[in-house]
Length: 391
Image 1 (cartoon, one colour):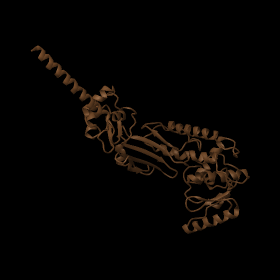
Image 2: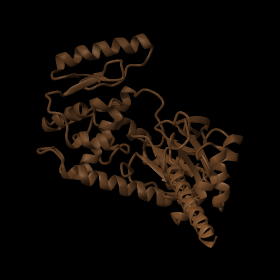
Image 3: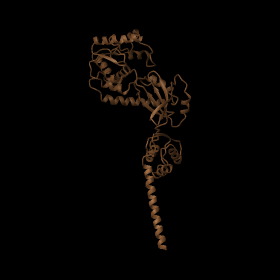
Image 4: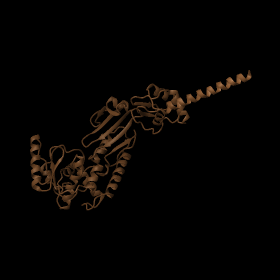
């Protein structure tokens, strides 16, 4: 009898072990295998949220198949206490292991809402946008100009969220004065700016910031980035350039930046100015004249007058020889590259062609033909004639 009982107990014990092993294998497969999501979702982890609460949220949103298995797997991996506050994009088919990695690794939100403060050449715009998890594209919620408009309610409400991301972007060709004035209107930044940084010293780029960051510190970061870019590109410059220092190259890059908005033209435009300097010709570029009038403090808002083209200023390259004394804007990396590695051409003239680009010429006769075509376009548009090289 006791032998029968022992045999039955052993059989039951083995059955329990087999069942436990099966459950363990099933749980491991559930934890590491592909998840149930058919489309990406944005999962928010509240500040101080427990693993239990987050696992229930994940199950409710369809990101995991079983909240209990997710909790057990997180405990087993010793990551139950590593949840990071924020909003995170969980891609289709993500396993529980991958979901746990997403919620515990970086701590930087990958979805939800963000504010981008875009500082442009003519205007600055605050844009609140939200990631559409299904398409992985940002959708604009509201946009406004802080210099002209009161912050809309959507922005005011969103600004209170702890996980809202903030970013400042500088357009290529903005002046240092424009950057400083725009940052003064950024209500999410703090601190005073003692002086406008030297022209050309700030790198047009995108900068991730936090609410309450110091304006002067952000300007310092922009300057450090521009210094690094210029140093790297100066070291890789072409031979025989007609400027001797990185600072002179930066002046040229700023002129190239203001002369063309077509990326593919930058090296051609740079070649024209390099060729002119090599031949002892004046640069004759309108943006330098404009800077001499405005000092970079806003747009001129009209065409140049003939009297202004003849007026002697340190920035009037129709009058002075060589480069102006400082950059006329903050050039981007591509314009600095163009100034330091221009195309090899024989061009010494260019003029707008009506498409946003330019017509280039190697001699005055061809240039005059291009100018006549541009004058016809100006007349057709009802615009005042602008100053061009060779006039």
